[in-house]
Length: 121
Image (cartoon, rainbow, N blue to C red):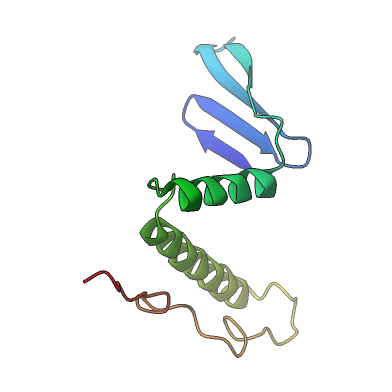
């Protein structure tokens, strides 16, 4: 994954589990750059996620990421996928072949698709 900003570039490699930040130290016709390797924990992400879940469930502590944040992330991911597919259809990515309808036969998740019911009230 890559992030491009005006004076900075960040590269994340999930397979290698490393991250690099390149920043502009001195802009101009002969710019100077600084390179910084970002620390990444040497833990398998799914293992860490499961450990955090078990910890939150057993200690009854607030999880690091709430259910509402998870729902929002899923909703955003659905909107991103629809946008990518709509763009592909507009620019005819398949080069003359009929492109699939956005999301195929699925619908993007609506705002209440991941709603939960609070049983504590």
